[in-house]
Image 1 (cartoon, rainbow, N blue to C red):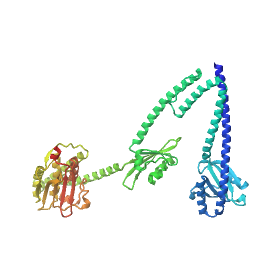
Image 2 (image 1 turned 60 degrees about the vertical axis):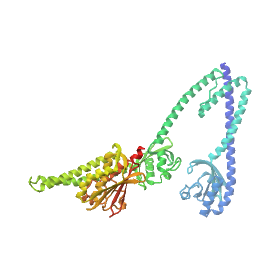
Image 3 (image 1 turned 45 degrees about the horizontal axis):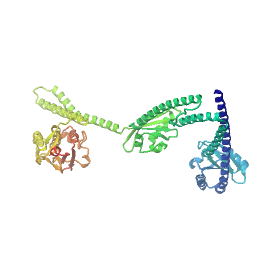
Image 4 (image 1 turned 90 degrees about the vertical axis):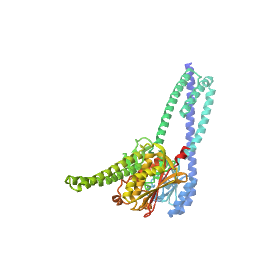
Amino acid sequence: MRFALRLNLLLALLALGLALTLSAVAVSVTDRAVEDRARDRLRREIDFLAEQIEPRLGEAGPLAELVRRASRLLGARVTVIAADGRVLDDSDVPRSEVAGMENHAGRPEVVAARAAGYGTSIRHSATLETDLLYLARALGPGRSHAPVLRMAIRLGDLRQVESQYEWILRGAVFAACALLVLVGGVAVARLARPIRDVTDAALAVARGDLSREAPERGPAEILELSSALSRMKSSLLESVARVEREHRLSEAVFETLPDGVTVIDAQYRVIDANRSFRAMTGTPDPAGRPLVEILRDRALFGPFEEAIARRAPTDAVVRRENEVTWQLAVRPLPPGSRAVAVGILRDVTAFERNEAMRRRFVADVSHELRTPVSSIAAAAETLTETEPDDPEAPRLVELVRRQARRMRELIDDLTDLSLIESGEVALSPEKVDLRALAGETAEELRATARSRDVSIRIESSDGVAVEGDRRRLGQILRNLLDNAVKFSPAGGTVRIRIDRVGRKPSLVVEDDGPGIPLAEQDRIFQRFYQVDRSRSKVRPGTGLGLAIVKHLAQLHGAEVTVASRPGQGSAFRVTFGRDAAEKEA
């Protein structure tokens, strides 16, 4: 049995050796035939092109146009070389770079063309980074010192043609050898079939087709090989499944990263980019494109060049023209792969804006606290030097009390605003009658209004109620009414109007004050913003009232607007989404 197996194996090996030998010979013959045909083709094309180019050798513009048009039509690289070896033009090199090309006088095909009229060679092109088949022809009568026309085609194109013939020849050779094996006898046929089945199964596994089953018939040795192949396939299936899971996980993490991430190669072309990078750069499909074309900003592209050149991490902060700020981190990758660097883009616009707001907030708080603190300190220092029965003592004590009250109001407003903005304010909704609320609030501020000779008038429709937190709604109205009283002139009137805009409840506070310029009206709801800083000395306040009004209104689903003109007073309107009766229905 073993002898028969060895004999059958020997016959199969002989057939295989013959097939490989014939295949190699056939491939070699095919290679030469294809290259000869390519040379013949180039010979015909270069003869034709030489007649067109020779009259234009002294005309740079027409020559360049003809060279590039011929390259496109013939599908070949066209180079014109001067008598001294300088390159006059090259279809595959930008015209601006032609002057910087190496001298071609010593190229083998050029030397051969000047010696015999034509010259050929196959070598690697440093300019195009690929193997080329060159054919050169001398132009003019004096070949040894004549200009040279050279054409070249990529060997990759030839090899594509060769591969078609090679597979046909190989198929024919192997078919003939298979027939020879069959004629060799029944024993060889019995052995060849299971071996072929095992081979096919192994090749299928190599191609990634793991559904192909190994044969279960044949001699013991073949069955043992089939069993080993089955075990290998099972192990490979497990490995492939594990790799696919890890790849999907990595891809999911990569795609969902909030920062924009891109990987580039040594030519600064994008290999891959995640969803955030595509969105930030406005590029749906950046793969394969030059990075500089995608970023369109030298400040962003420069760190990539620096990181790759220095093989060191590079960081940068880039402020774009549209008030967007990006933080860029570029990290070079270990050598040995196509990817050479990874770039991470982070949009830090909101962070920088918040930092600016924080700095401005600290400055505003410091400014607002400085005046009362200075007054309290000065009064306290004066009190320490004043006799108890000094008539100035009560005034100084009252000054300390008034400034301390102002500081407490500022701190209370800051605390309120902080809680509101952080979402820590919990509303206790109930049905609130706006007319009753207006009456209570007006009564609270009537003494203050009377001291300023300002009257408060309420104009209200009956039955206007909203669903909301009574205390917070009162805070909205109190802040608006306090501002209106504060800025109304002596003898002025503050009106509280309660009505509906369509079906929406509305609360309006109007005054006869100096009004607000149109350009300032969008900013008055900012913290500490004052239309005229000089007014704060006459009409002191925390500068936070309208900011609190805006945020509390938003918590109630309401909108605050202002209508005002300089010298004609102001009207602040709070419009609610719907009234309490409609909500209950």
